[in-house]
Each structure stands twice: as C-alpha cells, then as structure tokens.
Image (cartoon, rainbow, N blue to C red; front, top):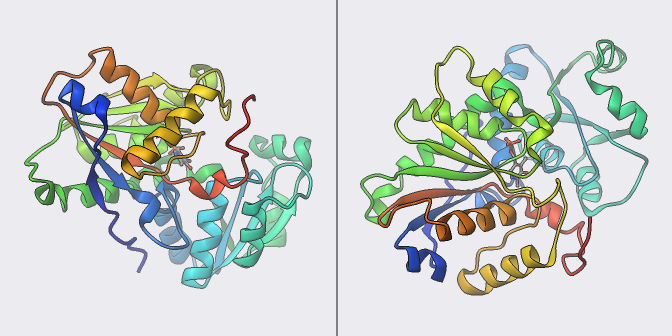
Length: 304
Ligand SMILES: *Cc1c(COP(=O)(O)O)cnc(C)c1O
C-alpha cells in the first residue's frame, strides 16, 4: 500500500565526468510522484506502517517553514487519506511550502523559536499526545532506524534498473546528507557490497557521524564515508554554487537546489577532479529531491 513509484535512473552526461572517465547514474527521487518528492517519502514508509499497526489515524511531526519532510508528510496524507499535524519552527509565515501544507490539509501549530528548541526535552510531546491521542508522532526529518529501514527500497529501485543502463554493477553511492538517515539506510541495505559516500550539507560538528553510528550500531557496518560539502554552513549559498547549479541544469537538464543536491554534486565534482575515483568507476548519485524548498529561495542572491 505504501510502495512508492519507480524513480528513473539516468546516466549523467557532464564534461567533468567524461574527462575523468567516471560514470554516474542519477536516481531521480525528485520524480517519484507529482506530490511526494525525494528521500523523505522513503523515510516515512516505516513510520506509516507503525502508525497503521498502532491504529493511529494520522501522523504528527515537526519541521521548519521550508521543510521537505513536512511537505512529503502532508502530501502523503493527502494522497493516502490520513490526518497530518505539523509543529512548525518560528512564527506564522506564508512560504510556498506552508501554503502547500495547508492546501494538503495539514493542521499547523507554530511553536516560536524557543518552543521549537524544546523539542528534545523529555516532556515535549506530552501536551501534543494529550491533544492528538490518535496520531503517531514522527521525529524531525523522519529520522532514526525506522526512517533508515524505509530507504532500503531506494537500493531496490537501482537494482531493478541497472541492466537498462547496460551496467552489471556499480562501485558506490554518492548522496547528500542532512541527518545521515538515508545514508545509514543504504549502508544497511548494501550489507557491505558497495560503499556509500555522504556529502554533508551541514558542518561536521552537527553530529551526523554520531547519528549514523547510532543507527548502524549492532549491524557492524562501516562501509561509508562522510565528506564535508556544506560550504561554510547549512543553507549557506555562494555564487560558485549557484553558477554550478545553473550550468548543470543547462548541460544535462537536471534541476538541483542549493541546500542538498547542488552541494552534493559540486562536492562530487571536486572529488572527481582531485582524482578520488579511478577511471572506470561507476557511481549512483541519489537525487534526494528538495526542489519544492527551492521556491523559498531567491537563487540569484548570495549570502547566508
Ligand atoms: C532531508 C534531505 C536530505 C538529507 O537526508 P538525511 O536522511 O537527513 O540525511 C538530502 N536531500 C534532500 C533534498 C533532503 O530534503
């Protein structure tokens, strides 16, 4: 019932890949569904199953005013017909994301900034559970082991399409990391067969390594590498990044956004040009979506 549609897997045609004799196939998770986009859908699947098993009639979760997670959740609620409640960071504002959340029928509560910061405190959920006893609570971003397990389906989508590219195998994965949940899910699904390279959209001190380790704990898996792709901070955008995104879209038609996918592909270019991957290497780049959030940014402006 919760099976996402197949995302296309396409060869990326870019000069800097050709020059290095490195082949990259891009899994277009931005195209799995007209409403629901990107990795957030996969991270929700196990949470939706748990909600179902527990007899919950919907999901309550939290995020910011541009949140890809809340957007995917609200879209899934509309698509599959369950109730959604979103707890938002900050004060009421009308971003394109927020307009969609409301159009999809998500009920919103604005927590302010202090109220949102309290989300990790022990008593945080109590009043919300009391107010919405029939809803299942999902952590910020759909993280944790449940979120990671849903991402095994991403590998299945690639496996099903490799032969269409004429590939028998690949050498590894490359994808953007925010919490590292999706990366951890792929590491578990690979079970050592191929390494997973995570391009960090947040600075290294944001605890991604710890979160990945906590999800992988007990599995014994260490087949991954985290690379700083944050360019000075989460959501920090500079002119070289914007120029790269515009050029990539011109060259191969793939739309990227500046927070995750644009930074991840630019970091891959830098690593390829530095000789990290031998000629003949074949990689899977995951387009993790996020294009809905791009509407909230003036992509011509530079700064934090
Ligand atoms: C949330 C998000 C990520 C990061 O996913 P994690 O599982 O938190 O690492 C990457 N790309 C996009 C577009 C996202 O919305």
